[in-house]
Image 1 (cartoon, rainbow, N blue to C red):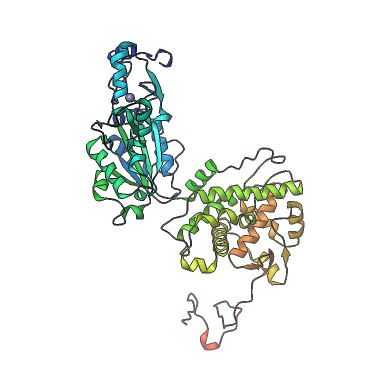
Image 2: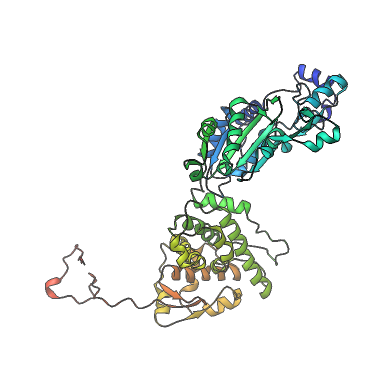
Length: 507
Ligand SMILES: [Zn+2]
């Protein structure tokens, strides 16, 4: 088809009547192309993970309904990405009048300049083809966006140069909306638009056309309008004028990944971790490090010290994983190691990728962003560790520390040194079998597993460590009479446990 695309108005007209070129409104075009994908069982939004059962069906319904729609969600929920992906549902290219700012259809031009060209050039009028990327226009709403930006204005300079009356249509300066004609116009953070711009949008949704101030013509634009907003801003009274809300066909809620697995897939897809030029066997990220990174975001989203209204973006684990890999890369470069293998302690070294990605509540402000982040990492490590080591017997290792053993290891020391220093801890090496690093792990991978166990025990408060990564036994528990039904413990005669019953203490 590309080679046979009509290049004049006469050719276009016969191609249209022969059914070779279709003329249809944007929302019909997107709807019909979507139907084609559904019938062919093709993915609707490749690369959008975790929305197959929730968000995607609702978007499909909105498109099938030919609705203008809004995505409501916190930051980092792939809203912009979804909106951009809508452009993939447009035809590969459409015929336009060359040079027209509003992408006029050569067979039915709106602007006076194009209409004049059709009159003078007639069948010989050249036809250009506009690709789908050029038909997607995106605007971040800010309070200073004006009607002139959005819809248009008269252009006195244009008028003066051409010697035209200001009322002449040819002096019009088109805003973003007319320039998006025959395409998709996306406005992000809709509630940030000033009220009168919202009124202007309402008119377009209501009437299907725009009128540029001072001109007698109305432009019947052909557009799919899509929006995004933070749900609380959108529902807050007075932020969105009610008639505008009423004209938006579908309101679709996005969400953060529901499972750690979905989240890990997104992070794997987005994070830059395959470092060209990395030493020897490249970057190997243990699964438990990926899980800890992801769990940091999950924990942060639940943390009462973090503002839930602004959310914790999926960009947090993405940036965090990149920074964790970099810390491991730096260690490997300095130590001249064969592979870049991130460890759990590298997550603590990556605080700069965390602290800017959430807003603190008052309680969090008091604690300080770094401390809040460290607490969250510790919670995340504890959670992931509990999953891996649910059935492991950790006593031999904790006893070694309780008997006064101490270890000084940190994210700066190389794998060989870490393994040497930790070799004295009886039972520690055996436990690495639970970390999922395989039967014969490389030294950096084994070191990462050992590091995971030490950090896991610390996270579960079974051992302690200083901020300088000195590990030692847990603080002796506060002295209080602890009695159990264990036979070894001497119990007063009148208090002997009956077989099959457990002694209970209420205090
Ligand atoms: Zn035109």
